[in-house]
Image 1: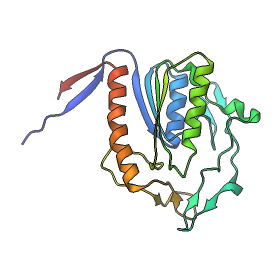
Image 2: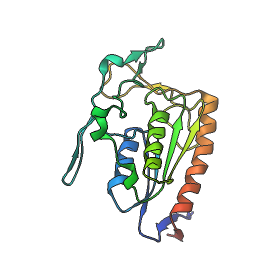
Image 3: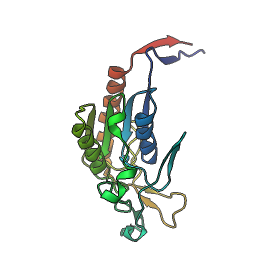
Image 4: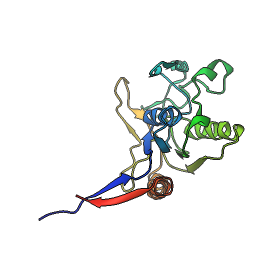
Length: 206
């Protein structure tokens, strides 16, 4: 039995980028430095370079120093790194803050308020404030109470904690089952609307 497939084709110059966690840091950097990026969705990411340098052509951005002493272990034995990263607002770290004002397209920040991995809402607010200071209103934030770090397409189960490479204990991602599920269902529809609004899409069959 045959099946019908749909391919979304971008009909005007530009692509959409969607990414989560460390990937959202990279996705935001793509929006800042790649002219091909026309719309960006950052899910529970940061607004600056952390842990590893960003290298692109002649550009090298040093990361903000981290603070291992701020790592915590919760009562369930999982590592909480919400306060592990250095503060992008510190004057000493300004060289690592991504220039979101250079993005040519709109940016949608999706954050879980019960994120135990990143202080993602604070990072999104800092990026939005940076856009406003440059006279831009191209940023928007969706914040979800009860949602953890790993926000994925709807109907996926909550991943509250799991093993992560390089750690001696499970990583705490956070979230509450009901709030996280509601956030995934609502945010996915909003993400689809965002891309439909800012990317001209054509539908064809294979």
